[in-house]
Length: 101
Image (tube, rainbow, N blue to C red; front, side, top):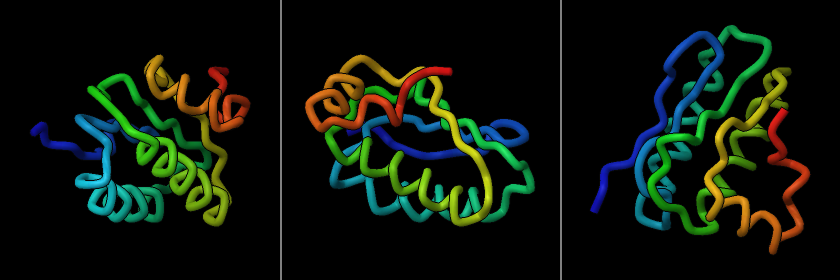
């Protein structure tokens, strides 16, 4: 099993690492909420380039992080959403939320 984490890697950038599933989701949810709250940046980027594998839990995490950022008055964009997560988003009707800008 791979370790998973969400880490601040720069001003306003959070990077997700590892496998996002029901085992890792709760801790990642907690880590991400704290990082978003602590950030002074007006805009956040959620970098998904280091996600190895994800179930629908990964999309739920991204949506939760987007809500956290919105409540904190920050804009959010998603970078490098893996194809397997994009497919889940498409089936779920959420593609427009994760479009690359």
